[in-house]
Figure 1 (cartoon, rainbow, N blue to C red):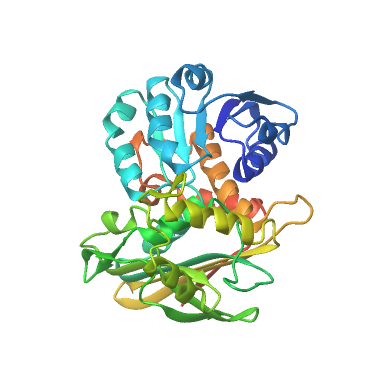
Figure 2: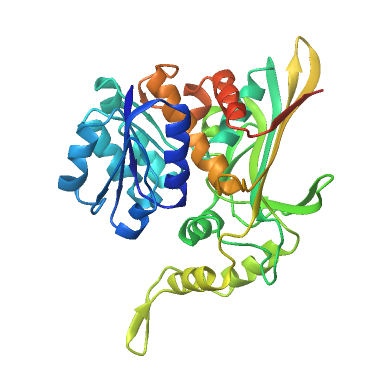
Length: 378
Protein backbone atom coordinates (compact mmCIF):
# COMPACT_ATOMS: atom_id res chain seq x y z
CA UNK A 1 0.00 0.00 0.00
CA UNK A 2 1.19 3.45 -0.98
CA UNK A 3 1.30 6.89 0.60
CA UNK A 4 0.43 9.60 -1.91
CA UNK A 5 1.13 13.33 -1.64
CA UNK A 6 -0.85 16.03 -3.46
CA UNK A 7 0.55 19.56 -3.48
CA UNK A 8 -2.45 21.84 -3.92
CA UNK A 9 -6.09 21.47 -2.91
CA UNK A 10 -8.02 22.99 -5.80
CA UNK A 11 -10.59 21.39 -8.07
CA UNK A 12 -8.13 18.99 -9.70
CA UNK A 13 -6.75 17.88 -6.35
CA UNK A 14 -10.25 17.14 -5.08
CA UNK A 15 -10.92 14.83 -8.02
CA UNK A 16 -7.48 13.26 -7.69
CA UNK A 17 -8.12 12.37 -4.04
CA UNK A 18 -11.38 10.70 -5.10
CA UNK A 19 -9.61 8.78 -7.85
CA UNK A 20 -6.76 7.53 -5.68
CA UNK A 21 -9.10 6.45 -2.88
CA UNK A 22 -11.29 4.54 -5.31
CA UNK A 23 -8.70 2.87 -7.52
CA UNK A 24 -5.18 2.97 -6.06
CA UNK A 25 -5.62 1.24 -2.66
CA UNK A 26 -3.75 3.95 -0.73
CA UNK A 27 -2.34 3.65 2.74
CA UNK A 28 -2.63 7.40 3.13
CA UNK A 29 -3.23 10.50 1.00
CA UNK A 30 -1.64 13.75 2.20
CA UNK A 31 -2.89 17.06 0.77
CA UNK A 32 -1.07 20.38 1.23
CA UNK A 33 -2.29 23.90 0.50
CA UNK A 34 -1.79 27.41 1.83
CA UNK A 35 -5.55 28.07 1.80
CA UNK A 36 -7.37 26.39 4.68
CA UNK A 37 -10.76 26.86 3.01
CA UNK A 38 -9.71 24.60 0.14
CA UNK A 39 -8.44 21.96 2.52
CA UNK A 40 -11.78 21.90 4.35
CA UNK A 41 -13.40 20.65 1.15
CA UNK A 42 -11.10 17.62 1.03
CA UNK A 43 -11.85 14.89 3.51
CA UNK A 44 -12.38 11.18 3.74
CA UNK A 45 -10.95 7.95 5.01
CA UNK A 46 -7.13 7.82 4.80
CA UNK A 47 -6.90 11.53 3.87
CA UNK A 48 -4.76 13.99 5.85
CA UNK A 49 -4.65 17.74 5.13
CA UNK A 50 -2.02 20.28 6.20
CA UNK A 51 -1.96 24.03 5.72
CA UNK A 52 1.27 25.67 4.62
CA UNK A 53 3.22 27.47 1.92
CA UNK A 54 4.23 25.16 -0.93
CA UNK A 55 7.22 27.40 -1.71
CA UNK A 56 8.60 26.79 1.81
CA UNK A 57 10.90 23.77 1.63
CA UNK A 58 10.97 23.44 5.43
CA UNK A 59 7.21 22.94 5.30
CA UNK A 60 6.95 20.56 2.34
CA UNK A 61 10.05 18.37 2.65
CA UNK A 62 8.93 16.32 5.67
CA UNK A 63 5.82 15.30 3.73
CA UNK A 64 7.88 14.28 0.69
CA UNK A 65 10.06 12.13 2.96
CA UNK A 66 6.97 10.30 4.20
CA UNK A 67 5.54 9.76 0.71
CA UNK A 68 5.96 7.21 -2.10
CA UNK A 69 4.42 9.12 -5.04
CA UNK A 70 3.71 12.87 -5.20
CA UNK A 71 1.74 15.05 -7.61
CA UNK A 72 1.83 18.81 -8.14
CA UNK A 73 -1.73 20.12 -8.45
CA UNK A 74 -1.07 23.82 -7.86
CA UNK A 75 0.22 26.51 -10.21
CA UNK A 76 2.59 25.18 -12.86
CA UNK A 77 5.18 27.72 -11.64
CA UNK A 78 5.89 25.46 -8.64
CA UNK A 79 6.55 22.31 -10.66
CA UNK A 80 10.33 22.68 -10.89
CA UNK A 81 10.70 23.45 -7.18
CA UNK A 82 8.49 20.53 -6.19
CA UNK A 83 10.35 18.21 -8.56
CA UNK A 84 13.60 19.16 -6.85
CA UNK A 85 12.07 18.55 -3.41
CA UNK A 86 10.80 15.19 -4.57
CA UNK A 87 14.19 14.00 -5.82
CA UNK A 88 15.97 15.30 -2.74
CA UNK A 89 13.64 13.31 -0.49
CA UNK A 90 13.29 10.03 -2.40
CA UNK A 91 9.78 10.42 -3.82
CA UNK A 92 8.43 9.61 -7.29
CA UNK A 93 6.83 12.69 -8.82
CA UNK A 94 4.35 13.73 -11.50
CA UNK A 95 2.44 16.88 -12.35
CA UNK A 96 -0.64 17.82 -14.35
CA UNK A 97 1.12 20.05 -16.84
CA UNK A 98 3.15 23.20 -17.01
CA UNK A 99 4.91 25.22 -19.62
CA UNK A 100 7.77 24.23 -21.87
CA UNK A 101 10.45 26.14 -19.98
CA UNK A 102 9.61 24.48 -16.67
CA UNK A 103 9.48 21.04 -18.30
CA UNK A 104 13.02 21.67 -19.59
CA UNK A 105 14.10 22.40 -16.02
CA UNK A 106 12.55 19.12 -14.89
CA UNK A 107 14.43 17.18 -17.59
CA UNK A 108 17.66 18.83 -16.42
CA UNK A 109 17.11 16.91 -13.16
CA UNK A 110 16.78 13.54 -14.91
CA UNK A 111 20.21 12.18 -13.96
CA UNK A 112 19.63 13.03 -10.31
CA UNK A 113 16.26 11.26 -10.38
CA UNK A 114 17.73 8.17 -12.05
CA UNK A 115 20.59 7.97 -9.53
CA UNK A 116 18.01 8.17 -6.75
CA UNK A 117 16.02 5.33 -8.40
CA UNK A 118 13.07 7.67 -8.93
CA UNK A 119 10.57 8.33 -11.71
CA UNK A 120 9.60 11.90 -12.63
CA UNK A 121 6.93 12.40 -15.30
CA UNK A 122 5.85 15.94 -16.14
CA UNK A 123 2.62 16.72 -17.98
CA UNK A 124 0.28 13.92 -16.87
CA UNK A 125 -3.08 15.66 -17.19
CA UNK A 126 -5.33 15.82 -20.24
CA UNK A 127 -3.24 17.79 -22.71
CA UNK A 128 -0.41 17.60 -22.07
CA UNK A 129 -0.75 14.04 -20.85
CA UNK A 130 -3.55 11.83 -22.08
CA UNK A 131 -3.31 13.22 -25.61
CA UNK A 132 0.38 12.29 -25.89
CA UNK A 133 -0.16 8.83 -24.42
CA UNK A 134 -2.92 8.06 -26.91
CA UNK A 135 -0.76 9.41 -29.74
CA UNK A 136 2.03 7.06 -28.67
CA UNK A 137 -0.43 4.16 -28.73
CA UNK A 138 -1.35 5.01 -32.31
CA UNK A 139 2.25 5.52 -33.42
CA UNK A 140 3.21 2.08 -32.07
CA UNK A 141 0.63 0.46 -34.37
CA UNK A 142 2.58 1.40 -37.54
CA UNK A 143 5.96 0.64 -39.03
CA UNK A 144 6.24 4.25 -40.14
CA UNK A 145 4.08 7.30 -39.40
CA UNK A 146 3.34 10.15 -41.75
CA UNK A 147 1.22 12.43 -39.55
CA UNK A 148 -0.20 12.92 -36.06
CA UNK A 149 -3.04 15.35 -35.34
CA UNK A 150 -4.24 16.11 -31.83
CA UNK A 151 -7.30 18.27 -31.21
CA UNK A 152 -8.47 18.80 -27.61
CA UNK A 153 -10.78 21.27 -25.88
CA UNK A 154 -12.77 21.84 -22.72
CA UNK A 155 -16.03 23.61 -23.50
CA UNK A 156 -19.19 24.74 -21.69
CA UNK A 157 -22.15 22.60 -22.67
CA UNK A 158 -24.21 25.80 -23.00
CA UNK A 159 -21.94 28.53 -24.38
CA UNK A 160 -22.61 32.15 -23.48
CA UNK A 161 -21.27 35.30 -25.15
CA UNK A 162 -18.95 37.05 -25.47
CA UNK A 163 -16.33 34.27 -25.48
CA UNK A 164 -18.50 31.12 -25.46
CA UNK A 165 -16.17 29.86 -22.77
CA UNK A 166 -16.10 29.25 -19.02
CA UNK A 167 -13.49 28.92 -16.28
CA UNK A 168 -12.47 25.26 -16.02
CA UNK A 169 -8.94 25.81 -14.74
CA UNK A 170 -6.64 28.69 -13.86
CA UNK A 171 -6.90 31.74 -16.17
CA UNK A 172 -3.14 32.05 -15.66
CA UNK A 173 -2.60 28.67 -17.31
CA UNK A 174 -5.12 29.47 -20.04
CA UNK A 175 -3.40 32.71 -21.04
CA UNK A 176 -0.04 30.96 -20.92
CA UNK A 177 -1.30 28.44 -23.49
CA UNK A 178 -2.55 31.25 -25.72
CA UNK A 179 0.59 33.39 -25.34
CA UNK A 180 3.59 31.12 -25.79
CA UNK A 181 4.63 29.66 -29.16
CA UNK A 182 3.85 26.06 -30.02
CA UNK A 183 6.28 23.47 -31.35
CA UNK A 184 5.20 21.24 -34.24
CA UNK A 185 6.82 18.93 -36.75
CA UNK A 186 6.83 20.06 -40.36
CA UNK A 187 8.54 17.72 -42.83
CA UNK A 188 10.14 16.00 -39.86
CA UNK A 189 11.71 19.19 -38.48
CA UNK A 190 10.96 21.03 -35.26
CA UNK A 191 9.15 24.24 -36.10
CA UNK A 192 7.92 27.01 -33.79
CA UNK A 193 4.61 28.65 -34.63
CA UNK A 194 2.71 31.45 -32.94
CA UNK A 195 -0.30 30.37 -30.91
CA UNK A 196 -3.79 31.49 -31.99
CA UNK A 197 -2.86 30.83 -35.64
CA UNK A 198 -3.79 28.43 -38.47
CA UNK A 199 -7.43 28.29 -37.44
CA UNK A 200 -9.30 25.34 -38.94
CA UNK A 201 -12.91 24.23 -38.95
CA UNK A 202 -13.75 20.82 -37.57
CA UNK A 203 -16.74 18.90 -36.28
CA UNK A 204 -17.47 16.02 -33.93
CA UNK A 205 -20.94 14.85 -34.93
CA UNK A 206 -23.65 14.48 -33.93
CA UNK A 207 -23.42 16.85 -30.97
CA UNK A 208 -20.76 19.26 -32.21
CA UNK A 209 -21.20 19.87 -35.93
CA UNK A 210 -19.30 23.17 -35.99
CA UNK A 211 -16.13 23.93 -34.07
CA UNK A 212 -12.77 25.61 -34.59
CA UNK A 213 -9.25 24.62 -33.63
CA UNK A 214 -6.02 26.62 -33.48
CA UNK A 215 -2.46 26.33 -32.25
CA UNK A 216 -1.75 26.72 -28.54
CA UNK A 217 1.39 25.96 -26.59
CA UNK A 218 2.23 22.96 -24.45
CA UNK A 219 -0.54 20.55 -25.41
CA UNK A 220 1.79 18.18 -27.26
CA UNK A 221 4.47 18.57 -24.58
CA UNK A 222 7.57 16.61 -25.66
CA UNK A 223 5.97 14.71 -28.57
CA UNK A 224 7.62 16.80 -31.32
CA UNK A 225 11.06 16.30 -29.74
CA UNK A 226 10.56 12.57 -29.30
CA UNK A 227 9.55 12.02 -32.92
CA UNK A 228 11.74 14.60 -34.64
CA UNK A 229 12.99 13.08 -37.90
CA UNK A 230 10.69 10.07 -37.48
CA UNK A 231 7.29 11.60 -38.26
CA UNK A 232 6.74 14.09 -41.07
CA UNK A 233 3.96 16.20 -39.60
CA UNK A 234 2.72 16.48 -36.02
CA UNK A 235 0.70 19.22 -34.37
CA UNK A 236 -1.65 19.98 -31.50
CA UNK A 237 -4.56 22.42 -31.59
CA UNK A 238 -7.12 23.57 -29.03
CA UNK A 239 -10.84 23.17 -29.78
CA UNK A 240 -13.27 26.04 -29.17
CA UNK A 241 -16.67 27.15 -30.39
CA UNK A 242 -16.50 29.20 -33.63
CA UNK A 243 -15.42 32.81 -33.22
CA UNK A 244 -13.57 32.37 -29.92
CA UNK A 245 -10.06 32.75 -31.30
CA UNK A 246 -10.90 35.96 -33.16
CA UNK A 247 -12.02 37.62 -29.92
CA UNK A 248 -9.05 36.36 -27.91
CA UNK A 249 -6.63 37.46 -30.60
CA UNK A 250 -8.18 40.95 -30.53
CA UNK A 251 -7.42 41.18 -26.79
CA UNK A 252 -3.87 39.95 -27.34
CA UNK A 253 -3.26 42.33 -30.24
CA UNK A 254 -4.53 45.16 -28.04
CA UNK A 255 -1.87 44.29 -25.45
CA UNK A 256 -4.18 42.90 -22.79
CA UNK A 257 -1.95 39.83 -22.30
CA UNK A 258 1.19 41.94 -21.72
CA UNK A 259 2.91 40.89 -18.47
CA UNK A 260 4.73 44.23 -18.06
CA UNK A 261 3.59 46.06 -14.90
CA UNK A 262 2.22 49.57 -15.36
CA UNK A 263 1.54 52.21 -12.75
CA UNK A 264 -2.07 53.39 -12.94
CA UNK A 265 -2.71 56.11 -10.37
CA UNK A 266 -1.62 54.48 -7.10
CA UNK A 267 -1.64 50.88 -8.33
CA UNK A 268 0.98 48.86 -10.19
CA UNK A 269 -0.55 46.11 -12.29
CA UNK A 270 0.08 44.37 -15.61
CA UNK A 271 -2.56 44.13 -18.35
CA UNK A 272 -2.21 40.33 -18.07
CA UNK A 273 -3.06 40.40 -14.37
CA UNK A 274 -6.06 42.61 -15.03
CA UNK A 275 -7.28 40.35 -17.85
CA UNK A 276 -6.99 37.30 -15.62
CA UNK A 277 -9.03 39.07 -12.96
CA UNK A 278 -11.70 40.09 -15.47
CA UNK A 279 -11.93 36.55 -16.88
CA UNK A 280 -12.25 35.13 -13.37
CA UNK A 281 -15.03 37.59 -12.52
CA UNK A 282 -16.98 37.60 -15.79
CA UNK A 283 -16.78 34.09 -17.24
CA UNK A 284 -19.09 31.40 -15.87
CA UNK A 285 -17.67 29.09 -13.21
CA UNK A 286 -18.75 25.54 -12.46
CA UNK A 287 -20.71 25.46 -15.70
CA UNK A 288 -21.62 21.99 -17.00
CA UNK A 289 -18.77 21.13 -19.34
CA UNK A 290 -17.69 18.72 -22.02
CA UNK A 291 -14.23 17.54 -23.00
CA UNK A 292 -13.64 16.81 -26.66
CA UNK A 293 -10.55 14.90 -27.79
CA UNK A 294 -9.72 13.78 -31.30
CA UNK A 295 -6.43 12.16 -32.18
CA UNK A 296 -5.48 10.89 -35.62
CA UNK A 297 -2.38 8.89 -36.55
CA UNK A 298 -1.75 8.02 -40.21
CA UNK A 299 1.01 5.64 -41.26
CA UNK A 300 2.05 2.43 -42.97
CA UNK A 301 2.00 -1.14 -41.65
CA UNK A 302 3.59 -3.92 -43.67
CA UNK A 303 3.51 -1.72 -46.73
CA UNK A 304 -0.17 -0.83 -46.41
CA UNK A 305 -1.37 2.69 -45.53
CA UNK A 306 -3.75 3.03 -42.61
CA UNK A 307 -5.13 5.34 -39.97
CA UNK A 308 -6.22 5.06 -36.34
CA UNK A 309 -8.34 7.65 -34.55
CA UNK A 310 -9.04 8.25 -30.87
CA UNK A 311 -12.21 10.07 -29.80
CA UNK A 312 -13.45 11.12 -26.36
CA UNK A 313 -16.61 13.11 -25.59
CA UNK A 314 -16.80 13.30 -21.81
CA UNK A 315 -19.31 15.25 -19.70
CA UNK A 316 -19.79 16.51 -16.16
CA UNK A 317 -20.61 13.56 -13.90
CA UNK A 318 -23.57 14.61 -11.76
CA UNK A 319 -23.15 11.60 -9.44
CA UNK A 320 -19.71 12.75 -8.25
CA UNK A 321 -19.97 16.43 -9.14
CA UNK A 322 -16.72 16.15 -11.07
CA UNK A 323 -16.49 18.21 -14.22
CA UNK A 324 -15.32 16.64 -17.44
CA UNK A 325 -12.12 18.67 -17.03
CA UNK A 326 -11.57 17.18 -13.57
CA UNK A 327 -12.31 13.67 -14.82
CA UNK A 328 -9.93 13.79 -17.77
CA UNK A 329 -7.16 15.78 -16.08
CA UNK A 330 -7.12 14.53 -12.49
CA UNK A 331 -8.11 10.96 -13.31
CA UNK A 332 -5.32 10.83 -15.89
CA UNK A 333 -2.84 11.92 -13.22
CA UNK A 334 -4.32 9.34 -10.84
CA UNK A 335 -3.75 6.60 -13.41
CA UNK A 336 -0.06 7.50 -13.74
CA UNK A 337 0.38 7.64 -9.95
CA UNK A 338 -1.32 4.24 -9.66
CA UNK A 339 0.93 2.79 -12.38
CA UNK A 340 4.05 4.03 -10.59
CA UNK A 341 2.80 2.61 -7.28
CA UNK A 342 1.94 -0.79 -8.75
CA UNK A 343 5.26 -1.05 -10.58
CA UNK A 344 3.86 -0.87 -14.11
CA UNK A 345 6.14 2.11 -14.74
CA UNK A 346 9.70 1.02 -14.01
CA UNK A 347 11.84 3.49 -15.99
CA UNK A 348 13.81 5.91 -13.86
CA UNK A 349 14.78 9.53 -14.42
CA UNK A 350 12.60 12.24 -15.94
CA UNK A 351 10.43 10.55 -18.54
CA UNK A 352 8.41 11.64 -21.53
CA UNK A 353 4.89 10.25 -21.12
CA UNK A 354 4.84 8.99 -24.71
CA UNK A 355 7.90 6.85 -23.96
CA UNK A 356 7.70 5.88 -20.31
CA UNK A 357 4.04 4.85 -19.92
CA UNK A 358 2.57 1.51 -20.96
CA UNK A 359 -0.28 2.66 -23.20
CA UNK A 360 -2.23 -0.61 -23.02
CA UNK A 361 -2.39 -0.48 -19.23
CA UNK A 362 -3.16 3.26 -19.27
CA UNK A 363 -6.11 2.77 -21.65
CA UNK A 364 -7.39 -0.13 -19.54
CA UNK A 365 -7.37 2.03 -16.40
CA UNK A 366 -8.90 4.96 -18.28
CA UNK A 367 -11.89 2.85 -19.27
CA UNK A 368 -12.26 1.53 -15.71
CA UNK A 369 -12.86 5.12 -14.69
CA UNK A 370 -15.82 5.38 -17.06
CA UNK A 371 -14.16 7.61 -19.64
CA UNK A 372 -15.47 6.39 -22.97
CA UNK A 373 -12.58 6.21 -25.39
CA UNK A 374 -13.42 5.13 -28.93
CA UNK A 375 -10.62 3.75 -31.09
CA UNK A 376 -11.30 3.33 -34.82
CA UNK A 377 -8.86 1.58 -37.13
CA UNK A 378 -9.02 2.16 -40.86
